[in-house]
Length: 524
Image 1 (spheres, one colour):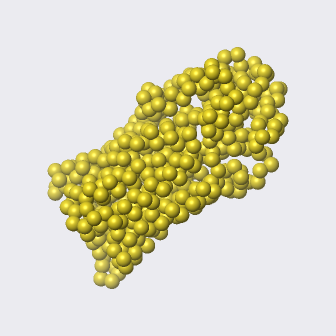
Image 2: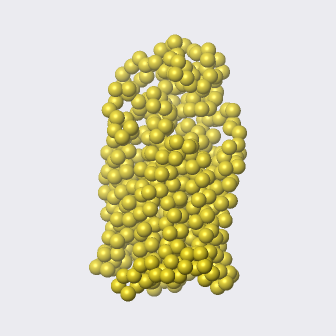
């Protein structure tokens, strides 16, 4: 039996031929036996690289792993450019029909969605104030989606592995309904319910989106970084467009209206998702032609996506710890940087908003750089270097804000406009925040690429949810921890909480560097 990957899906066909070199890694030497590719109810004869999908007496080599004989990746896309039609048109180095077209539609829908998300980001605290919430109650409202994301990450990943589109559609519908509920909530209890619903919708939809992105990137593994960087840059662009648009909406119609913008964007994204192809084969479709012994072996192989099993591998431990460290940086961006920026930059809150917008736009620089380095230098190397770089930027913020730092860069005025002066200290602080954002944006696609490379076939979405859950869990308590540091030491050293976040980011990057090169399991 041979499992053969196609541009559309992995399918199973029956064959009595075997390859004596089943344990050899894939090579450019064609296998002397011809395998058959079943696609769209048509048989096509196709040569495969020796060892790529060949079966032997006991095992076969697939996607860099030795697998047991009879084990089938029930609904996964096998990697390698050899699995798309050689006659397929190429756009920006990507196969048009199997990668470029669905990727473009996915990214366009993400752009629309995050324009809506960007509109609501600066609105949540204002909305809580409008309906009379205290600061602590507002904190509960803000953290509610993260709690739902954490609790549902595992089950959402399992569901998305059965079908990407269904998860994306149902999750996006729940997002749209939840933001309508947020807009019309009259008090704290219904508002918390609506925000928990948002987190649940995000968990389901994002699991499907991550899985589909992994499927598309897996078809061109040599360009994985480029594909992931395009997605992250799209998110950054959407938020950058949406934030000022949201300000106009709030000024004209009030804070509630911004949540309706998210609902409208979610509905548009949902409609666009309808036109995306499904990138996995349903479990039942694949098992129809398999005997009971093969099904049992396949079910055993699916357990590889269980989080407990993944965390037996040091590489997953390192990845999860690195994601936790990165979450401290994003927590500092939301909880700490705006306060420091308002105190340091001219214009107060306006200056802080301008800095955050600039930091968001810097993702359009960092993401492509991270994607390029991921393809050239490797995902783990890029994630570690970008993490250490961004951590050092945050660690340097207390130095930039200290009074004696003027000895190094002076205290003159660098820019003056409308009576506001931008001093050297404010410029140094702003530069460090923007450089951190570039580093974080570069690390994003690299971390995702590491997870995609490690994810076992058939359980991609569930596996990719593990580092995301680690980050979401960290994000729940990280702002509180940074606040404790600021309360304890902030009066003595301004920005010390940023250094604390930077230290956690360094620990995360070092964990990936040390544990990420751990030994692989010989058999999934």
